[in-house]
Image (cartoon, rainbow, N blue to C red; front, side, top):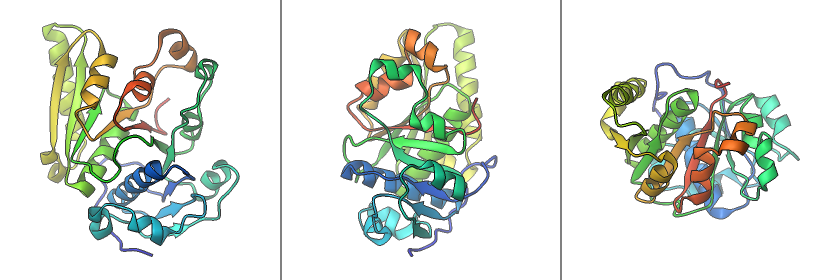
Length: 268
């Protein structure tokens, strides 16, 4: 067991608070990043963290976290016996959030089907991490937003991570139309999203409207100036993504820096 945080949930409209679950991850960098994310989110939701990851001892895992996590942003943590798949673990423990490594070895035809994170998000919020970059230093976080529950979960997670690392968060909205109406709508979206964050935590958030005809290229380029990018999952169906592409999927593939993708249980 490790210390219980005295932090409170990030947003007033927080999701149902069940335990957070860290799934099996073999890649060392991805495991350390996932551990940090899971501990930060569990601390912000003030809930237990369950670990089901290759027999990893929770005490050993906590020692690999940044010092900020070990000193104030860890939740009560318990090991679970590893299952063949995550489905029975999720069904049994009904977590409010699950942190797993995203699958990187996907073929083009795979785009036609729901991936593991999308399938599991029918039962719980899901955050996917990758093994790129440095898992120890997070001073700046980019959060591209377009509205909706996926963006809301991305913001909640980014703020939780920022709290644990004393990091800054930039909410980033791309304007693909250079009109007064688009600017007003974009500014309103950013203000509404900031308003969902607890007032005492808004001082670490900045907002940014960026005018460009290509959202994917803009997000990919800007992500390289940040230690971490947290963005919402695709909202289109797999078939539409296969035909027209997906901003989130392309950023995951093309960005050089680490990308976390948030799949909200409450999004269709």
